[in-house]
Image (cartoon, rainbow, N blue to C red; front, side, top):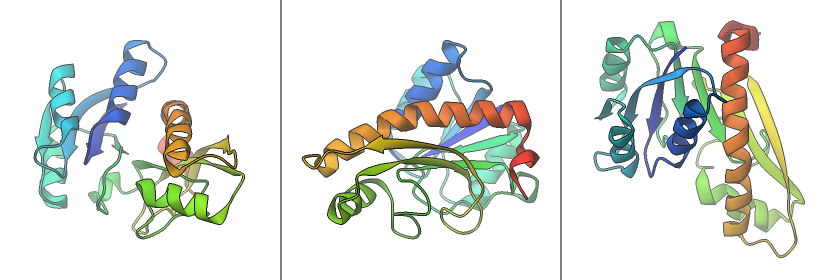
Length: 188
């Protein structure tokens, strides 16, 4: 399956995808990497790995690039804008969220904001969710969830580290499921 990675930051998830594809533990091929931030470290990493890498200022620019690369699956990897795909990819956008949806999700809940909210609420278990994205933040069909046990002494940074470790397993697992079963099998 031909995949595009959309990112806004350092590209840690891209690193994970690249390593897993090289180790043949993740299916699919990364055809292009696109960032909403012109100088994102993730773009430098993409170029180092040999992937075409572009900055795109808006959805129209992104969709034009995706069209040129015949993309079948879009992977949101720390992409911090609401992405609106073209009609033929409307059901083919995967996202990872750093909590167990439906907890700690929705507009404004991303990154460290989630982990600080988890700490403040005092939950004992958090995790991550890989889901298909739609026009509403964190509401599309869920593909994989991974739980993370928390200790009372965990700081938001500790929680972030534990959750990212779970994400590194969950996202490739979800991609493999989508490649094996097909995108439509996850939608009602």
